[in-house]
Image (cartoon, rainbow, N blue to C red; front, top):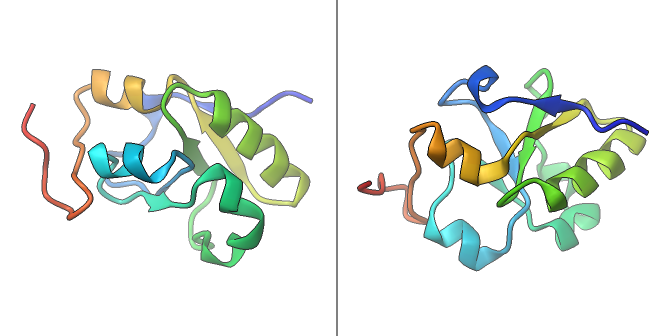
Length: 107
């Protein structure tokens, strides 16, 4: 099965994305409108996924965990795509990161 992909440049800065990283990674910095559900908790927290978006981008640090999440969510009938390059690519593209409290991180 091919994993649907989306590039960072195709995701608006304020897009709702699903972040499947662990809590400490999330707290260190995440996309401003991201929803945090660690990969291991995903099967039990599907009701927390936003349902008002078209294709939901899924992200982790570099793309491995989010690829697994996308494969599984696709099997469950969700319209999702892996964010190519993960949060490394997001940050590398100059997109905003916020701390756990929602405050912008200084670069």
